[in-house]
Image 1 (cartoon, protein in one colour):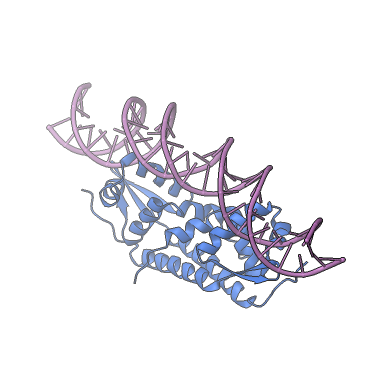
Image 2 (cartoon, rainbow over the protein chains, first blue to last red):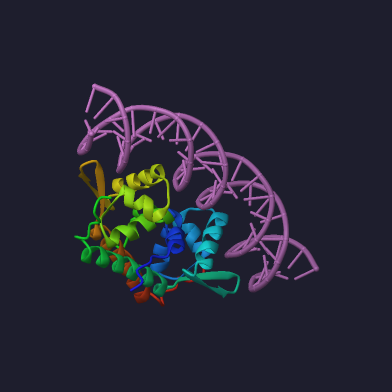
Length: 102
Length: 102
DNA sequence: GGCTGGTATCAGCACCGGGTGATGTGACAG
DNA sequence: CTGTCACATCACCCGGTGCTGATACCAGCC
């Protein structure tokens, strides 16, 4: 079992605004305008964060006329959840392992 | 269902060295000296990161003479895993929700 | 007691990354 | 074709944060 958590993916999600975006996109597919309304952030700011999320593979884009819809990819989040679950399970199993003092 | 992921906890885990520490502590309980050997980082640096992990409740300390053992708290990681799993599940359920263009 | 080794804290620095404004592009409406 | 709107990109500033060296603290050993 690998149990190595993807650092880059966590760093992408570690930003409050990006996590907010992800949480919103978990409920429904939205375009940038909606996200501006929901978050109150500037369009430029959101566009930058959305690019980070896109390049990390967390979201998918779907152009619709002059709008761009953003949709969360559940499998990416599920994979991350699995990595953390594995880590927790491993920690539970090895709870009593203690390396001796040098 | 809440499904709100704890941003502060993720930010704590978003650092490569801290995640490395957590991964190592998932296998066995270690003291700072061991972590210095394993990671190659300076003692000061590690001590700073360990403080962050401690204050975030991710690890517990157990003094043993002049050594300090660090132990991962599996429940914290498991809780995070659950939050992400919920988020993924929610995204799967609401996969076809799409708000109309304004 | 003094000394040594393990650990924590402090102050400083350098760098990364998030926020913003200006600007570019592309698509619809008129 | 021209204006407008949605969105992306670029250049820049600035604050947070990780890394480091110096130092303090504390426990065991001589």
